[in-house]
Structures are given as structure tokens and as C-alpha cells.
Length: 248
Image 1 (tube, rainbow, N blue to C red):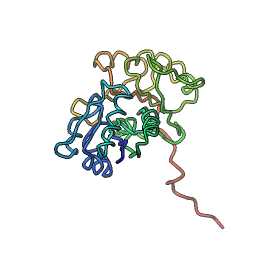
Image 2 (image 1 turned 135 degrees about the horizontal axis):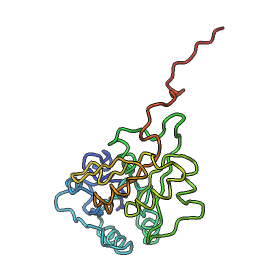
Image 3 (image 1 turned 120 degrees about the horizontal axis):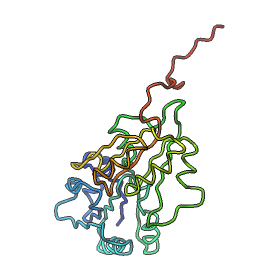
Image 4 (image 1 turned 135 degrees about the vertical axis):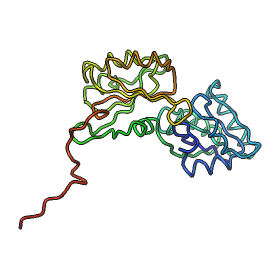
């Protein structure tokens, strides 16, 4: 039997991939983080499935559920918020499963930053404004950031930033980024994208801290920063632009 790490996207039941729905519907055991998912996602689980909310479990306890299910001959749908390639702890869980001899696979999902960009109708890579997106987080009571991966380092590039796991430090993040992007740089904060409790904030580095605090946001949010979020004057992409005819 197999543990399926499944990207549950931003948490909305209709933003799962077809493969994700199929695997969930075929798995008698489903582990999920209740903090990040709309309960409607669980409607895809089969009748009588064992549903385990992992938000208060450590990795050893989560893996133990997977191992027991494997020994009982059950597939496991291990739902991850967003896409499993980002901040999902798949690496730690997979290492433990390998040691236990439990097979696993990964199904991608809609990343939180992509859902946020879609909600505000913005492309994060606009010609001659920004052609790179940096996906990062800040250190706050968690594992330290590697050397060379500070916010300031990334901000110096001028790239569009997607900051995860940092909503409780939104004001500090804005202050650290202001010297590089300017106080009037546009910012978008999206919490619980595409869920009933969805919150979308649009502001600038000089006011987004106040907005976040006023909205009472404490978790499940992504912060997007960069001039691409509010620009109208930009060059046309060569990829789709009109090509000049060869005069010869």
C-alpha cells in the first residue's frame, strides 16, 4: 500500500487536480491539516474513511498513522496545503517512511502564491518589470534560514517576492523590504484563498502592516510584494509580439 502526498491547493475543494480527487476517493485513510483546508475537501474521501486532523500532531505521530495504515493494507491520502514542493515537510516524512519501508508518491497541487495572484488578476512576471519570482519565508520560532537567504538578499534583486509563513510578522517584513522597493511598493496579502473565510488585502509597504493587524490575520496567508502588482506601463513580450518581416 502507498502513502500519497497530495497537494490540496489553497484549500478549496474545486481546486484539487483530477488525480488528487481520484487518490483521495480511493484511500481509506486521509490525513489533513485542518488549519488550512475547507472541510469540503474531505467530501472526496470514501464513505467510512478514517479522517485524521494533523494540526496538533508531530511528524512522528503522523508517520505512525501512515505506518499502521500500510500494515493494515490501506492506502493513505496525506493532504498537504498548496503544493508539496513548498513548506510541506514531505522531505522529513518521506525519510521516515523510507526507513519504515513504506512506499510513497507525490501529486502536485495549486501553490498558495499562484492562487493569490489569480485572485487579484496579476501576472507575477511582467516584461521589463520583473522576470523572477522568489518563494521564501522568514525565521520565526522555526528552523533558521540558510546563509545567503535573507529577505534583504532577495529584495536587492528587485524580483517579485512571495513570502510564506510570515503573516504574524507582516509589519517587520514591510520595514525590511522598504529600503529596496520603496514605501509605495504594492503589496497583496491573501488568506484562506478560495475558501469561505477568504481575505484579500491590497496595499503598500507603508500601510500593509496596519491592514494585516486590523484584519486579525494570524495564519494561512501569503504576502506578495513587487511593482508587478500595480503596473500599466510595461513592454510587450517578444514571445507573442508582432514579428518584423525580413525586408530581404
